[in-house]
Image (tube, rainbow, N blue to C red; front, top):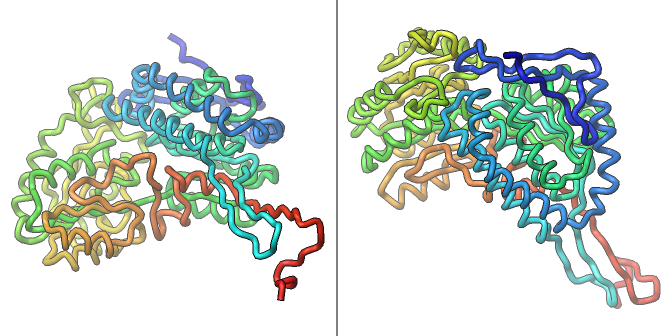
Length: 497
């Protein structure tokens, strides 16, 4: 059967790329399965999408925010109705197991409903004027056309984090989804269109970063950029945006640590570590790739974690009996293999896993064993560098203070977790860990949409996804003064003295 053909979305129309070039979207659990054929967009496709967004902005910004929000609310309802179909599409193109892709769609649903509520808020400020008979206030106004570049690991949730707050604030968008997972973004935007979104408010250009993403960075009518991906690419995006004075939101890598203290509920910490280290096959920016364990429970923890990892069933995510799906592509498999070799050469003890799975039925997919290294030192490369695969390093520690230093001692600062039953230690950890997110007695993954999401250091540039932090990025402040005194009044000069 011929693969399904997909197109770009420009000005409300599904159109081919101007060049006619295409690329295939493959199932990472079985690369013989072509999910679809998508346009490989270039500069002229981006130009057309930006022009459509620019034209739509003139009307969309004047649409009352509560009316914009009603479209988002209807979109959330449609996503609820289509949740199972969209989850299955996502598992086929991205690989993660169905319970996780259902959660990915649910996150988009949650974001739709949350941001719909913001449409009746979008609060500003009123303050007293220093002059009589004068009114002073600040209101939020949209930025204009926003360019968005999204990753493959959360191919519906992350686009929803960007698109929904942007459009409820009155912006229009051009989004380039990851070439590994374009279908989930198409499904998301189809729900928006079916909910009544006007043509041109959201436009999709498919393709590769240098060809379809880079032109957005340079386009003079793109007023802001939102990027989620690697720190290496994020640096390029940030530098390009800075040259053109574009606001730029960067959400990038992580090397997150779970700290397990001697007084912790060890079984609970094991549950959390298995989920944080091997959920999404370790392909989350918030994944726990380091576990810092106090000496008193280290051996017990390591033995239990190894037993649980070996019991995980790896296979196609569409089979609900499987616990962990494939990695996304050959490049990620090679990166995981490279770091397993580095860990061995550094003297880390391989406790379980460490190899690609090529058994019957899995040889055409990108499957890797859940892998655990023990007796690691905090300065080893496997404990410092983001791997983005199912590999976790166990690091022994002598105290909470040392564990916090280890947690902080990497280039990133996204997520963190501490398992303890001592409230004093929990609060010291919350105070001293330098990261954008901290969990107590819970794993490093599981952020909720109504709180800000993002990190410190090489993880980002200070902006936040989620919650009011997203609204802050997609709006700018406008100060307004209304003088009803019917005479000239000069601030800082006419003081009334």
